[in-house]
Image (cartoon, rainbow, N blue to C red):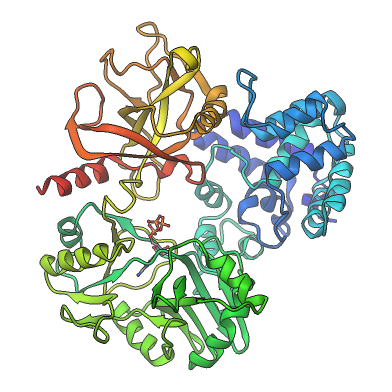
Length: 605
Ligand code: ATP
């Protein structure tokens, strides 16, 4: 057994507790370093790191345990009656009105566990925990999962179980970014992870912090973190950003980003979060084997559904269903279609360092398109050149901004998601969102659903919602420096309509533990919020810190108003909440600069 494996889970839990409540980031990092140096073996950092960065570990399969299933398994593991007060608390963890911590499953679970487990640690080691988690991931049914959870409960106290639940849910909320953890671990860790998506390999190769690692290239069979697109407000802004470059504009397809790795007859379908979606194999692997003319390659593209009766792509959302229908041999008008827009590896060579133009040429040599099943996205030179009469043009080289505008207009009239502009001279860079790819989306397609703003405060309602927060003060982020999270949030507007009562309840319940009374003028709001002194803006409560908050997608009458009430230069007329983005982390909030660009584009300036 390694020193890491022999370390007690209680030590790891103290580290977690300490990191979570300590500021600033540098202190969090040095504590993490101390833990590595004191309690881990350099030959085995992985046993601990896979627990700390649990969302990145792909050595273990998925647990198949989201909060609701976990709740029923815990109830059974604790031998509680399903209608006991504690069981109902677990089942209704999101609700609970004034119950503190409602909406935070691990804390609710810890409270329930505390009444049964007591404070004494059961002395579980990291090895034992990893073994039990392995068994949990491979357990075939709920009964087995319940019995493993019951073993875990016997060997831990409530504090430890709380963190284990967070590990299972793959969200530790430590308040330290994955980037910082990687950086503290080894200066080359993030780079190596980006091209391998393999945490174990990173831990094994980068044992010694002082020894630099030669930049590694991508390999067939190892997922690569995808290159991403930066959002721009309008065609002019995009054109300015790519000034002097040779530019291709492409239709932005609305499907699943999938990287296909082909090695002979072994084919992998890696998602954006590097899960291997083998379910696509039934529908796609024959097509790939027959129409990809090389033995080994990596393709980058979007998996979509093609409707053979309508002769066009179907609305997003049915990929998994179609994959299942293909597996079960069911007949359908719909089929999976992979649109390849890039190639990263051919034969035994990585080609990400070649220009996009060169990669397009390779793509044409390597992929034999098959209508409605396997399409390639390479530019057609000149406007109005359709592939054949009546077929839309998905990609072209643009020579001036008017051509970009025209393509954008045509694409959006077609109800597509928008367009992506790419520098034809650029190489493909893992995990890059620095602007080599730009995305441009029309406002009206989703009625502005892309105004993703952060809740920073709440206003009490009246009548039915008296005494409860019923409206939110939302903010835009200050434009962050490259590769960092935003540090300040700038008040933007007040919004309350758009959600159902239940949806509103869920948000309020989730945020309630972090509400802090606004004590004007005794106490200034937290320094990471930029607000005005205007009494119309002043909320009743603040959210304790941005990391604890939630993103809302808001829509409005596109027109904006110059704002004096709020700190951002513009605010919205008639804002409405379109949906709650539980899936977006706080730092992916829209920034002021991008918003101002949007305003200028919709005002035609
Ligand atoms: P969004 O929510 O706008 O799709 P995102 O955050 O998921 O954005 P971005 O990096 O901003 O991802 O946009 C790039 C995504 O757009 C890719 O991950 C891919 O799934 C999709 N996409 C569709 N068509 C293209 C294309 N032609 N080129 C590149 N990406 C494309």
